[in-house]
Image 1 (cartoon, one colour):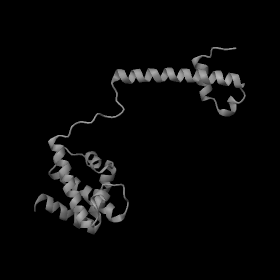
Image 2 (cartoon, one colour; image 1 turned 135 degrees about the horizontal axis):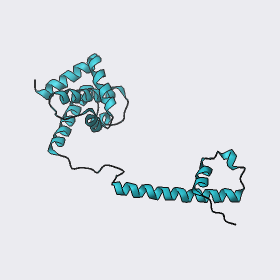
Image 3 (spheres, rainbow, N blue to C red; image 1 turned 90 degrees about the horizontal axis):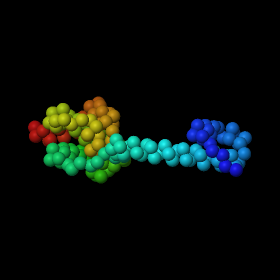
Length: 168
């Protein structure tokens, strides 16, 4: 015996709490579940069609690096290398997710230097783009800049790197 279950009833079944579903016979639960699966598959097809129609991509397409972007990356590399020398840590550790204090401080100083350079030298650079270079978010860069300004040895390191980069 097959009954046709409406879309409304199938969606109501999905939203129904488990204890309420237990009152329904097993054969009816199977029919409701099958109907719910059909309804959801139809919705998925509609959403995929809309996404395709609107040309929405899951991930942004990668663009080739511009000469200006390559110059910024070279600048980041130089700043990170100087921070690594001062704090005596490896470069790969600074670019990693490590939370060891010297590594974190070197990373924060490098981010703070990039923020200062952003204000001086680099045009159209945002906190988000600096954060992406380090694999972090903009709030982390803001925190790093504040912390490097407050703590003495980090401020000294930041000033030393800035003077070397600026050539003064």
